[in-house]
Image (tube, rainbow, N blue to C red; front, top):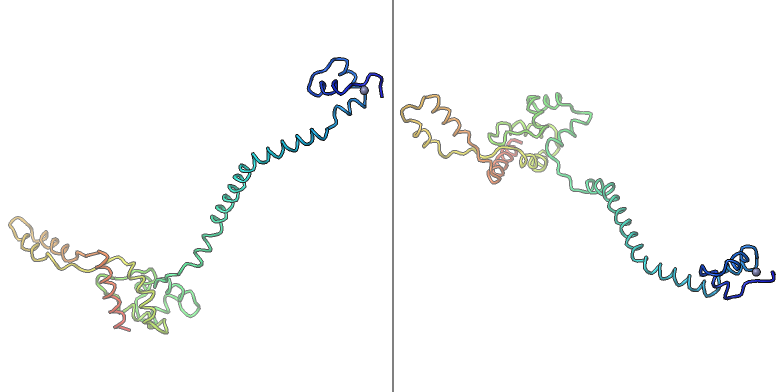
Length: 231
Ligand SMILES: [Zn+2]
């Protein structure tokens, strides 16, 4: 211990950034006083603990906010990468006739040529069916569809009422409109309207098709009925 060690008051002054030059010089060289200066008293420790506790209390809501946000972001990125495939796997699968035929032709026993030959339909027509192309409006291909289903399926009616029906509901076309033809011909009979023009008007009117949802469904029902009758 050195002779002129610092008093408690001098130590406090130094701690608070004050004190004389002499006491500062002393504290720099005296181990005891420098140790006392650096020592943390129980009261200081208590104050520090209280300060940290209050800081934690103040920042806790923010911390929680950050954690929640991070958890939410993690959940979102998880849902982006994982949920869609799961959803698509569990979704009820609607099979169209094109898909059904595609799967059948993917098996060893059939290819487009051999199935067309077996069903006795043109390959081009079978190819159209594979692409879900049907003559919904004029029903010129219902017999061919029936032949293909008969050649391929154990229960052709089941395939007709299932995949074929789903395909027909998605096929463009509709009901042929029979109205207006007579008026059009009469109207076109006026002088100055050429025969060709009158014919084209008549023709255009004849192939006018009602493609409303109701008409398309009606056409699909007639088409299916034709196929079922031909099985
Ligand atoms: Zn000292």
